[in-house]
Length: 127
Image (tube, one colour):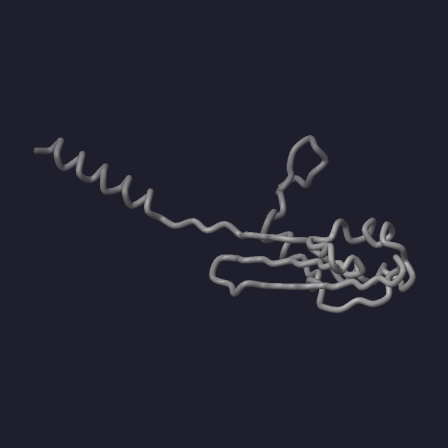
């Protein structure tokens, strides 16, 4: 009788642990910050812009003078955050920028990679 109770409790605990829901943060697209946008200047060529912002998420073959950068972050119990930035080129040169970059407050980086605590011989802090 005692073995049946232990077995039942063990199975119950394993089921309870296995049914717990863990949700990971989902980050998609290009993280563009206001600091990155501030480096852009009208008249820059496409290579210079790409060196600052990276490859655009969308390049429409029918509108090659428009680059779209999109970023979204979904965190547990927080509404979906979305940011979109459109760059327009004329004759291969940056003409205008529309949209909103990520605020650049570090929240996206913290959501994906929390800060590491360092200690020991690697030059980190000691308690």
